[in-house]
Length: 409
Image 1 (cartoon, one colour):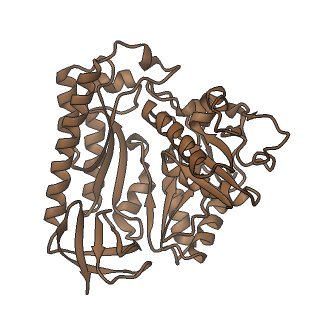
Image 2 (cartoon, helix red, strand yellow; image 1 turned 60 degrees about the vertical axis):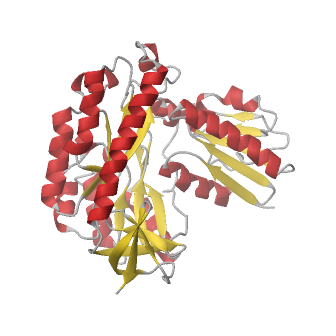
């Protein structure tokens, strides 16, 4: 049956899953790459494991990723699981060997080295390349730093070579991803500036064939001057920026241990939009963080307008083990759900209005699968009769549900 990967969670996981699939020896195996960002993500990981066993009763099931790193014993206790491998161990040659091996292979992720190569290898029209892993921040709601370890960045050459492989395999758009990519610091010595903006400048300078470069989630307070220069002057850097905002109330941001204020977030969006007229903004927001009052929740709701958010990921707060937020006074579950629903509804209205406003415009669209793709601003667009990999200007004729309908000129 071969090696199958089942991936939950972030884009980083998807890049790493493909890398593991290529590293694993041939055989009947399912690799479940888990997520631990919320309790719901852990529940979905367990569901995926059980489903994999039902669908592949004879396969070896290996569980890895953040949830496996944080609670390996719980996953090893599942009868469906043959081996649990931690984040620090998933690129080891012996990680995928099952017979006569310990059931758990999980070492100290805080002492783990930087992965040997940049993860990419998706061989798709839009391909993800990891430039960094881990996180040095300690947000009070988050366990990912415990699951991933400290921030470690890949050398420019490793990132560049991974992108070249993806372009050679047919990728038309590269997405740089990681756990906290705005903390990128080039580990090479004697290279001068080392941040994410300088990495992007070097990549775009080195690779004329790289026509579309996109960035995954950014910490707004870490956007550097070099990156802002690219926003203003480099059309190959695509203008959709997804920001890790989390809340729109200063007291809640302080209790989250975020490093920006509400005013900082609004100012960052203002700078991005001043640098380039067609910038679009996405955001992660948490509803019902401990101690959140109705006034605090309304401040977050208003942030959708103040930051012109057209693609919101709304997370109902879920207490994670071994975090200080889990020990704070909790908001009632029904209130958390209601506030999340209110945020989602408001975000959906803003997105609907944004999509409607694009009807009649012309947008460059990259076709990915099934005659569907995305514009530079990351609007989903369907173009009848189009071919995977086409990248052309489309006239937006209308809208169908949550996607635009266009025709190539």
